[in-house]
Amino acid sequence: MKETIYIKDIISCLEEVAPLHWQEDYDNAGLIVGNSTNECTGALICLDVFTSTVKEAIEKNCNLIVSHHPFIFRGIKNLPYDSQITQILTLAIKNDIAIYSAHTNIDSSMMGVNDILGEKLGLENISPLENSRFAKENNYLGSGAIGFLKEKIAVYDYLLNIKKSLGLHTIKYIGDSKKQIQKVGYCGGAGSFLIEKAIEENCDVFMSGDLKYHDFLSYEGQVILVDIGHFESENFIKQRFFDIISKKIRNFANLYISEQTNRVKFL
Image (cartoon, rainbow, N blue to C red; front, top):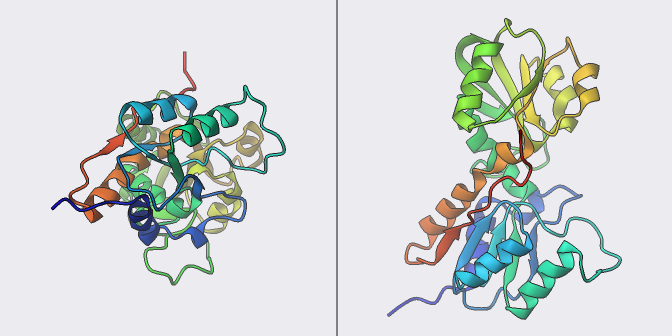
């Protein structure tokens, strides 16, 4: 007899490894729209939710979308008909589709963004970059992390390795490209708020996405700053969502990863 899988069952899988109370105060992780008690016909996993994502879910008979970034992030005062948020909500509600996001809570998980990024950056002995009140909880890593390379390597050579392993179009950095490095601080997504902490921890490099021009100039000479891109530093979380769910619910076949790519293009 086929076991019935409910939307709440899939949510439970994700919250086991990334509890909602780990999210930052500014975040909006969790069930954004929909009924978690509905039977799940299928789940579509994505980084961001667009109207095209909801249409893709409809085509694949998925009544659950699991995203990394919440499509409603801040307070809403109005819903103009032609706005993307309105279009997403309208499509989701009309088609009885639930949308759930695991964002900064999965960033901080030992099974989340910073864990995978550390592997891709070739780092060992990974530990939290900053102290947190959640530090003693199981599977908690934090919003940023520190790791070590097996041996020292010149910045330029290391960045070439990173460019290849992450499939990057470009890397922005500031600092001496010939300097030998070993201790790396990093944060998936936008991590400029952790630059000073990386300096305090004597990291040779701090790597993240969405670093500003003035960040590079302000901290030049204190730490080598590297911007690998926001999308590029997190896109792989989709596969981790897939793995977490399929490992816990082995007989759930209707699980898909969205075909979406980075909407920001490079010439």
